[in-house]
Image 1 (tube, rainbow, N blue to C red):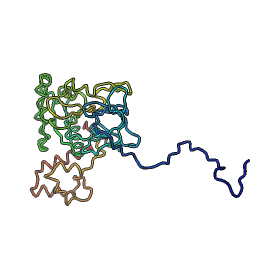
Image 2: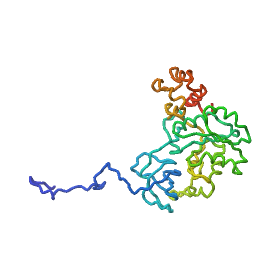
Image 3: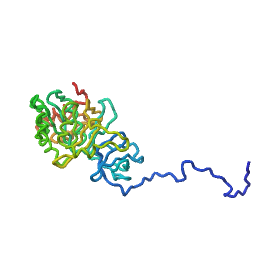
Length: 336
């Protein structure tokens, strides 16, 4: 055993190597000033297809982003191989600030909030007038999610050859929601697609609806096959494909500028995350009346100031009824 004297030379001291490397740890993150902007088109098991300029690029999230996830519609910054060629992989190093979000939970008791789409301008709520029967409570929930997330909603009513639309539209007349009515025959001759396309020009639109309402059929009519090739290729990293109805998919429109985002069919639309104070923003005629509401007012309590506001003639009572009906959807199941 070696013993050191009183005056030890530093060169005689042995140092154990650092198995984790010799570079000091730092919290400073790289700036990636050379990163290129892109848009997330679809997400498949940790691999994201992004549109960079005019080509699809497969990317993965950089470790430095931590648990922050990118979703369809996100504007991201990428580095690495951006050629889009087979077997290449880029890295997403930044996720831009979101202007709007479509969020949902599995049910009203589930605290886990899932962002479905980011940066969409509007939400197209697709529902059939028959086969299957309309589900007004599910429509109400989608409306609440749109208002809460900053999206403008409109209704697309399909299968008008099987049932008239007037009864369903009567429920939403006081909300002044735009709508378009289509039928099966028009989906094939192009007339229905052209009417819907008028609402989509120059905008990013997310489509939602439960299975069987004709949502994906309508999206297929809006986006021709040649434009689907942008995102229709097999994932070069995993070697697998993913059908458009099992994950959200952004597609460029035909004939006009804009994008549609086809989302998977929904069975439920949980609203655990919804704050009533955000939904009221969609009712500008009622919003000034909330100034005298008690703190954290849910706008259904006896102390709510909106009753007096409406009684004084500042707004239509039907509008207050519509607001409260939408907010009450958190306490009701879609099938009720």
